[in-house]
Length: 172
Image (cartoon, rainbow, N blue to C red; front, side):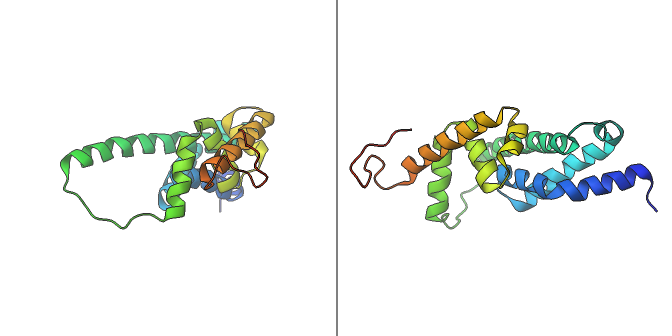
């Protein structure tokens, strides 16, 4: 039988796991890595559960930890990739899908804050208020970033970015 803290944590975990996984998946782009990062964040939450459980939004705390862990993982992977590039023989892999490449390229060309807002809202399917909590900014700022990000992506992903059907120029 579970004690009170273990039972509370189990309920918290079940209620917040899907959203935490969505955030980590959006940030890592890899389901396995996303699950590992999310689990690590929950381990940290359990280690400090007596304190974390008293927070107004313990789920936001876990997602923030998961976000930081994702960034740390990305940085370690970048260092490792640099080392591997210098020290291994060339491997042959099939090229990525054209649409995926175009989307990633376009996402990399928009400002980071807009990219995070677009990824968290559209790919992780998080509501604007949740993105605002994660980004620690007002919901109106997230909405502006989304609007600007979508406009920039539309220009980057269209075959004729300056040509509208009616001949009008677009602007971001």
